[in-house]
Image (cartoon, rainbow, N blue to C red):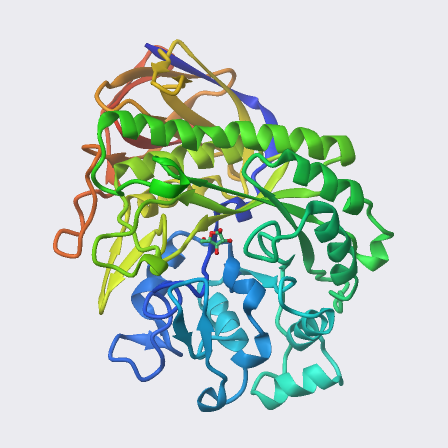
Length: 504
Ligand code: AHR
């Protein structure tokens, strides 16, 4: 029997909503078909954005969206995506399937999407194949209010008011697809490029994100930070507000990856073990960040995370389209609980990717759309956004003895919101054994006001013919035992419990 003790008087750190962020790249059917179908589509849309997708995403309270890549960002030239659509330059999307990109979704469309979603904006600039001038002018185009060549061009293209860019990434994966650079070279480029990423509105300054490490490349983090970490006086809004980190879970390694839906129990555990590796990554990169930035002014920005399997049979391998099972639900729960626990340093994270690519929350086929198990977990966890992490301690749960090593059986995190409502998210990683848990509070007396569960047989997933095999269901299978709440977490499940102070 496990015991979860919650200290409702000990608030540890603020959970920035951006930890629940998303990522949409010009990759496969993420932007085109998945989000943007064009104004003339028979699929219901508002200004070209599919209404079903926007509505489903709004229910998740998406806090921030990253665009246009990914690897695509470092070969994207923003001027190709503005002006009359018929006149927009076509290009080859060399990274993703070699398909023709017609640039019909560009800067104006991205801001329209974020307006509809009501979310913050995270633009990723091009260092790999773009110039300093190009990056600088994009920022001027998007954010300068007044008379200037780029502001005038924006007005000519139909948008007089500047937009708000909340985050700006200076390159993507510059150790790989973004230019194959060495850390010291990229770090110097970062210093240079970010100089011209001007902050035109001091009241709403954009935050600059420096390109960080791939997985456990701690040398990259150390070298880049040594060159870039100083903060110039606040009026210059530099050098950096965040450092990124990318980590994907490939159950059978980068080369083989493994099927999204056909796996044995051993692979289930290997996948979850690899997801749990995020704990080590965040801790170790965080420790290096602490050396340079003990006051934690620089946020860790995990702007790409998720599972990456072999694509679905019969689909374009360059489109990274994959199914999503209860295993992905558990990966999401493990990862999001880790981010909550490290929210003193992790300020933003972006699930890769939002629709039809990798660990997507939504899948589409023509006019049909389904919510994945990951969607339902993100929906449960949305209550943590903007909460305060509470101290919580889990004891008594047996560890899972996997081939890879020991793995905690239960994942958890706890937060309190401004109204005093406490959110607990728990996952049982076991493929076949339920686990009993007693929950207690150090101080107040609470009662459950909401409780849901996502789970099922470990391979369970939703299809276009059967879209609700895995869904978030209300539960009431808990009971008060003295001053504790007792419940059983089924194998392969994620549980949300919300508590209000008794008598409220
Ligand atoms: O998300 C898919 C790709 O993974 C991104 O384009 C790239 O940044 C990463 O390697």
